[in-house]
Length: 293
Ligand SMILES: [Zn+2]
View (tube, protein in one colour):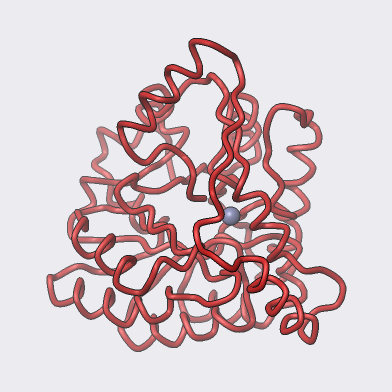
């Protein structure tokens, strides 16, 4: 997800909201012009791939409207090991993460590039896309990548949903992934980056670790900001142990694949290795590894 506070200004604004009301709805602009046209074109294109569902329009609708409730934040959850944003003591390693797939157009292209540059990555998949695109998910695992749980239907797990509904959604996605890859996923990324105490507990009790992303590595690639914008964001901000937020499912034109063609060789030349999130976590200093991986 891409709306969680990625800078201090946003945090300040949120504090103001929190002080005046328990729950504030913020509408985020669609980002690029002509989105309706893009959606229509894409819906036509994707109907050949799947007639039973089309995540793109639905996911994008969710991306535009995010609720920011009053809640415990990073200062509380990070030291406890409940949520991971990055692993700064992991040495020259970076974890690329791709959300919302698998996608039959972009995921294979991304896998090809990762292979070319001997990079490993983590794919946070939407549970209900896993079986229709099982071959892509299996290929990712076969090539050494990690598959994480990103909910079953990309619904925001938030206030208004009971704990049982949240638990059921995560479990449904878990089972879809396990059926296809024959392993239990260990990482969970909440849709929209939204979390609250109830969700943190459910995720932990389900045997998962919740993973978000480095705030300085939110590429916003889902709204096709241009190849160079994505490249600059990642390359100019790269630090040891970063977790980079990217998307393999992007409505309409994707800039992500082209951006990777520059990001991968550039950071590799600087001595970075691209690893899965679980590998990144395994390099935390023992003192900080409050919970076992
Ligand atoms: Zn997502």
